[in-house]
Length: 63
Image (cartoon, rainbow, N blue to C red; front, side, top):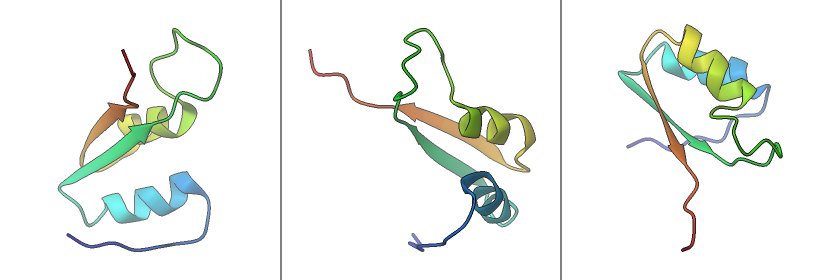
């Protein structure tokens, strides 16, 4: 596992990382206020355009 901190636009940085990856795993925060919305704009863009597989993991919901 490699951990890096990179400054820049999230989509640009993640797309560059995806070019070298087999799998891109993203967290979904759900802070947009749209309860029925499945993906945010960053996740949607990466799911549509990343050169590798993308998994979007939703935030944990306390029950």
